[in-house]
Amino acid sequence: MLFIANAEGWPGVPTTVRMLREGADSLTALVAGIGEVEAEVRVRSVGRGGWPNMLGEMECDAAVMDGTTREVGAVGAVPHTLHVARLAHEVMKRLPHVMLTGEGARRFASEIGLPVEDVLLPDSRRVWWERLERELSPEERGRFPDIPLAPLLRAITDPERVRDTTVYLSADPARGIHAATSTSGWAWKYPGRLGDSPIPGAGYYADSRHGATACTHTGEMTMRCSTARSIVLALKLGHPLDDAVAMAVEDLAGLKDGFLGGVVIHAVDARGDHRVVNFRCPGEIRYWLWDDTMAEPELRAAQTA
Image (cartoon, rainbow, N blue to C red; front, side, top):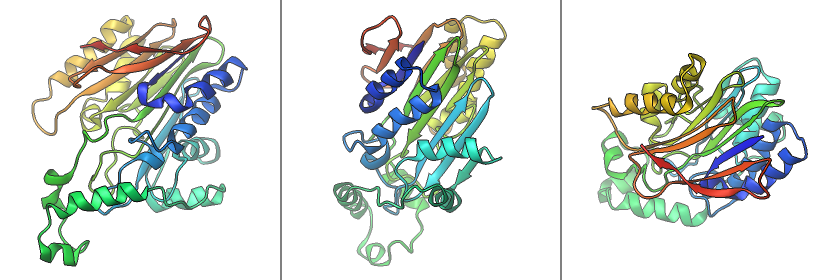
């Protein structure tokens, strides 16, 4: 059994590891751990600690994928909902659909008993408005939000205020290979923006026959390159994990136009190997690793592409 998570996933790592040790269903263990990340205010990229869109509203995204059946549950731009990874899991289990978004996702959340919540912290609301005020004229402040938002986007959107979706991957010969993600996305994003986190093949992909990948940071790039699916497909075609990840990095490096930034790739294969690779993200990137030969999870440094 192998489990990896990005560094910001720390609040839920002990729970997921404990459940995996006890033989729990792998996806259930991943979702339970991510639920603790979503509730932790010190993690500023997910759930209650996240940042709002340009209108000061929280819109969260999440997904799960069962690598054995290749079933997917995903939700995007969900308002007033804290535990969106659980919501995505229930989409997979209860509905014939792969993805729900916006108010439809919120309606389904109510049907399954997830409460309507004000996810945004008061201090985050203060920071959001102070940032917006610096860019708005007195007339625009008086008319807000009934003003054009697009001209403000480049001035106030802040993908680097937080850098990480929470991503959890597990791999086990008996229980399969699975993936789960959760995020509040870019700070001050345009309302309705989806990143790669809920998009199968872009921000995550799992196939128990071959491996799984989950990506963090600049989702606009991994959506353009289908990064997660590309790595798993390369594994299917017989390439070793290092080569599969290197090919994905080469695709990302080939992007010359549009919004460009850094990407972190988390990947596992069916042989129990893993790689976490930092492509153009500043500073040291770290991740959690645990396998069933280890007494406790370890925080390790990612490779640099």
